[in-house]
Length: 222
Image 1 (cartoon, helix red, strand yellow):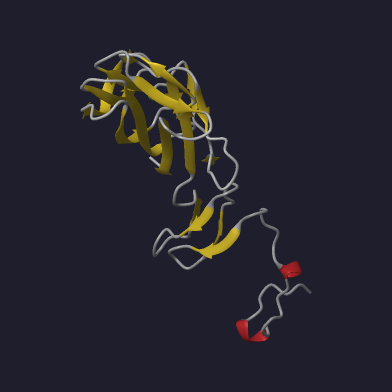
Image 2 (spheres, helix red, strand yellow; image 1 turned 60 degrees about the horizontal axis):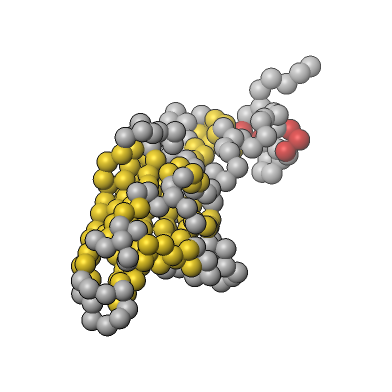
């Protein structure tokens, strides 16, 4: 005769083995719902972590917190121009050997000076331009532009600097940065622009180390 009911005192401690448990789904975790009944937490994706949903709800798998992407690029060759809109050539990812750092996680892509984000999320973008002034006094600047329709661009962040020639040559560095909430990687893109009062001013670049460079950091989910 089959036994259809066993009281709790009839089950001794450590008596129920894994072999006696009902089959489940690979990767599921047993938890409890708001009513105290056992439930299976659905399997997450690779790289996700188990995250509390607070009291009264089972935990869930979610993307790991913290920085999930860093990318470093630089200008490899110096050039002279009054206005480069955008900086569109001689760009490379940092490829120095360790301990220099190139990238972590997904990577940015660039085509003709237009930058595409690898995934949605909250990003910080930093741009630094170094200039060489052969003589005289003038201004220079660097700016970040964004498009929301993959066509028309507006200024997102800009910084200008006035150089007073105190010796020949004089060097100057201009920086700008911004925070972005990227929700559409197809249409939301950025570009970098440098401006100089005198076209004889040189924007410095080098393939061995950073002079004019760009940093991209994904801080978290959108």
